Length: 240
Length: 302
Image (cartoon, rainbow over the protein chains, first blue to last red):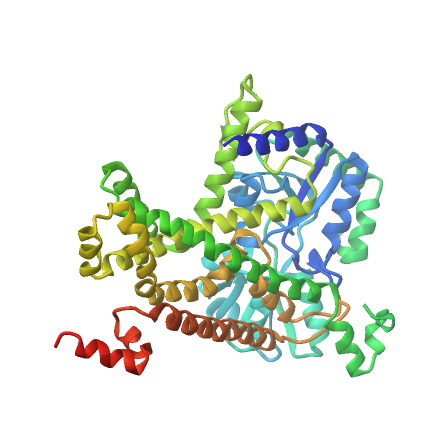
């Protein structure tokens, strides 16, 4: 017991010394080019670069934490990290649990990707695969198509390749690299617009942090630096 | 890793593989095997300790302790493992923060639960705010370890409880006849002899424990299954080493790893079985008895 008290004391002391502002940034690390783990085992992608820039301007020390998509909101709420930057669309359902900054990426259209030669009508009566707990999953559930869900984006692509699903519905920018690399095997067959832009998620009680990042996102939109990043990782169509 | 790895796209095959298999992510993959083995080596004795405590509690004639032991095994064995693996780390984590909050910040006036959020003052955060990432990882690993120990301890408790009761009544009666106290009987007669009865059950639990290690990923620890899935998945040209879906090969490696653990465990438990059977009044013990002595024993009653 004494040891425990001592250990707790040391921990508490540590807390007092290290009160420097370290913000833990949660991300999924499996959704290129938004965020992905590169071959050097570091988080990379649009959101990594944007997040680092936001922290630099806010004078905060930031640390990235990888968390799988399905538990990314519960673990934010539990305090494992302080923000989510993981290609997360701002939706009313999510707003009931966490709050968002303003969007840092405008509405990216979603697209259906299928093997070349797949008829377009599968989007109404075929089998569509999506990542679970995404706006795309919510959308397909309301159409007449059958829905299969996988926890990681990568598995959704495999499901299309091996014929388990007729098409995958995901953010268009995510799918394009697969289309490009497949050499004609995979094609986009339809596009729709879902959601209201991508923003940074924070705990509802963390107003100060939200306002800090909100102001800097606004600043970056104004001085054009956000657009530069968007052009670097995506394309001209998505700029503000 | 190697000097020729700067531009992998132009490398010949063997060099490409040399670079690929030593990339940062692959090193993390190899490291994760160590994490799994470490978890097993630490979780097994801890579960044994929890189980031994639980078994003693179940045997206790002091009612509250007895109920505690029985409640623990019934509860943990009855609820799906996965629920406990998710529940225990959150409960312990928030419990510690709750305690620290009351010690460090007595005059905090805001509620601890604000809507969905659990908010304690900055001094009560564990690990403290601003800790380097490895502190978070070690903390997460320890919470996972405790979860494994509690869950598997319940199964061990029941096995040991049964083993203690399987020690032949004659042995205990003899001890009593010699005037040993219940405590001495337990220490000298039951405890040394119960292991042979516990061993098959314990080896079962160990096997289940080794297979439960992929649950680590649920707790945010990047274990071998996580890396196999992550590395095996198709990599587009955004990555330095693009490749198609290679998950089957990665899972094959993980499969071989678990089979190796199983093979080693089998050998270890066979060895233990033989050792513990020596001198026991079981058929296994009988088989180990030197020929001459066995005959002598058979003649003795006559």
